[in-house]
Image (cartoon, rainbow, N blue to C red; front, side, top):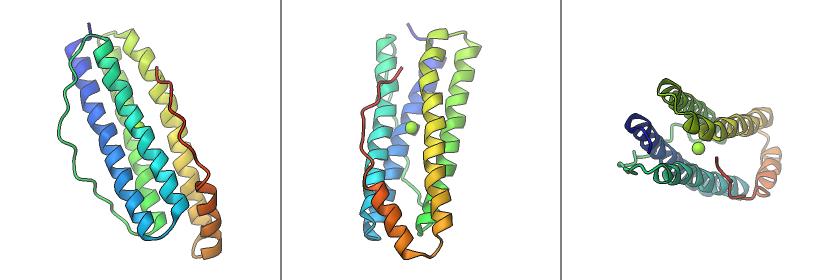
Amino acid sequence: MINEKMQNAFNDQINKEFYSEYLYLAMKAKFAEMNLQGFVNWFDVQVQEERAHGMGMYDYILERGGEVKLEAIDKPQIKGTTPIEIFEQVVEHEEYVTSRINALMDVAEEIKDRAALSFLDWYLKEQVEEESSVGGVLATLKLIGDDKKALLMLDKDLAARVFNPPVIG
Ligand code: MG
């Protein structure tokens, strides 16, 4: 049986993962408006990943005999309008998610829930990958600057991304 404090922390993070899904869904629409279909595809994969992250914790709570409690998801707020501005926010958001996973691990450590710690290890590694991947796109966008041709080349690259359902835990 999962400890209640741990369960609440997981439920809170499920909400944050679903918020991430919602935020990236909103960003996907912004890139569709810009007619950058490769970015649209990239965000589509990102959306599916966030859903999988949330569901991983959802399933985990149930597996440990806990209670899943879903709360309202905040309205997504997109701060910028250009690809660079949007990706600056993506990087910032993923850094925030990493800090949240660390906080979850703090709770697991505090109550000595080693099973939860081991489960969360996957999320920590995933965040290293997420930060590297989104940071890479932002760095490329900064190199591209106002070069429309180079932006279209990046768009073509991002069109190749495919969703591989993660095996969590
Ligand atoms: Mg996530």
